[in-house]
Image (cartoon, rainbow, N blue to C red; front, side, top):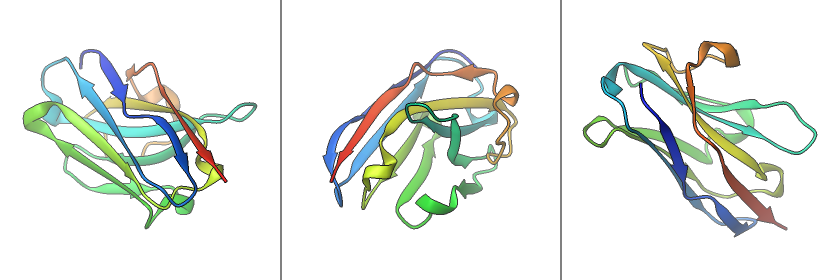
Length: 124
């Protein structure tokens, strides 16, 4: 994979929506497992959602039904649609890529490429 660049973060009210975008500048994008992680101040980085190179999706329990991960291999892009946002979703969100990854890897070291992060802030 190449470089991952996230965008789409910002400020939202509780109950609102944001869509994060992550673009990969490398090749063989369709062979990558792609995941979104987040890290709140003072907390560990945690898995939020992932999509395997086969297209199978996985979610953290607390976001299932509110967040949707998808990919467009023709555009080398992975998305995270976040609906019904909660203040607890406030964090720095990172995109990560794992070669032939299943999309549900929680171990950070399995990912060979990370984006720089995009901030999501949800107000009550």
